[in-house]
Image (cartoon, rainbow, N blue to C red; front, side, top):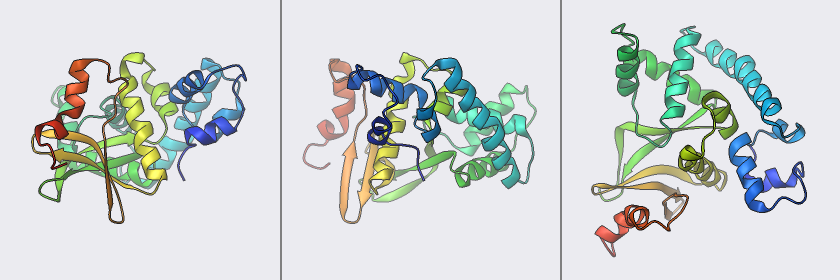
Length: 233
């Protein structure tokens, strides 16, 4: 079970009738798509209180119940790291190095990080998206991207900023592809990256996610995989 799609979010009819679709989509990005959110008054304090309450009473307890380790502080640090690095490649070793440095040399084992990440996945809190070498036709390890199941929980924990909207959009697109039955990878094409490689049966589709293509530098970056090797991708 995944949170509501944008279409399902609109069907709840909980938003002002005079809002246009852009205003409604902005609300979807900011408050997320847990079904219960659509029954709440659409106010920051009310929605955030619900989301943080759900995080504290359900997510943390559920994950800790599944985990051999019961260190809630470490769990929260790992989850916050994953959230703040949405859209970036991470690994258990990378998280371990960051947290060890943050704790002034107190070692955090990569095996512990890997165990927590695995538990967060099994609890459907985060979803791991592996890399795939499109040219070499093989899955790459150990770096992956992780997306949190609900953007509302992500924003309640880390705060919402228009400067971070690109990563929120990536999250929405990833889960929409999953809803449509695709297996999703991060594509590596020579030295460039394709945001998503979506595979279903014999069908393959490639997606780049950006807020706007109006800026020439952004347009060049997003089209680089196809532009550098025309006719191959």
